[in-house]
Image (cartoon, rainbow, N blue to C red):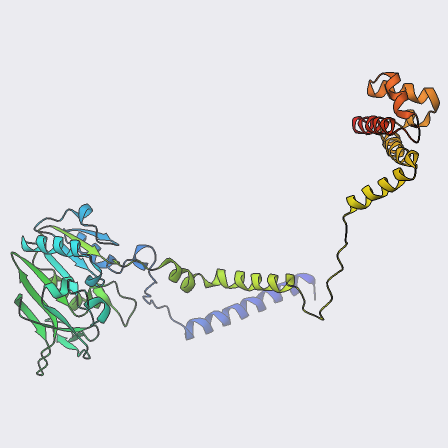
Length: 383
């Protein structure tokens, strides 16, 4: 068989294999589409009221999101609405008074009821207590919310229940119908304005997935529209989603452990490597009775007392000559008057002065000894 026919047969075999695989794939699989909800990114990851703000804006309203309640910057008007997601008991007395004054002239305030807390409720001047709202420790029961054309929904299954002491006029109220006096949602009249107190606000949030749909469900949007109805389309919606800022240290410990935990382990390992090893106790080294300078001084006084002053002079002279050999080897190699002239030229000194320094003083002449040692030290320092 020729080479050409061989390559032709190989190509035909490859085509047959590819055709068989294509037929097998097409017979077992079919094209289809599937919708997948992608995880949130950007602002929806930290602003749970992002979907509500965008829904209001697309409906033609004006809405703003804020992390904290800032009344001077908000400049509230009688037709505005303020929705606070966090605990209203964290507000200061000044903020409480300003909010109630604004509500009294036509504002709409939406709050979430909180569970009783001895520390926070001990103040006695929080916003909920001023409105006559009392927290309840009992378990919450789901309430049925039916929208025509939609499946029945169960709302307010979580959150908190509350009771009203009657100090504020109630416009609407929604609670359990089985004899329980607790309330899940109440709309209170305060002057010309209204205050909505909700036991749960999950239906107003973005939603985290299939189990927590948030505003993606039509019944939730209708319920949100009902809650925001008093000033809907009149003024600005101020959505406060995080009045209580998380602690920096708590955030670092909770979310920053992939960084600080390895660094802590590395630091502990470094401390262990650098730490002193414990072993048998050794006696402390014996301290010397005198310092080195005292020994040198005592040795010099001994030599001077016994008439050995030339030895002291010779020690200083040898120190000078040792440095001279390093700084001026040519002058150090000379002897006699030639060396004296070379040293005088190098130091720019008078020859007579150098000759005096290089001569050995008499053994009994202390003045000459001190003078020659002083000159030698000066010559050595100037090299």
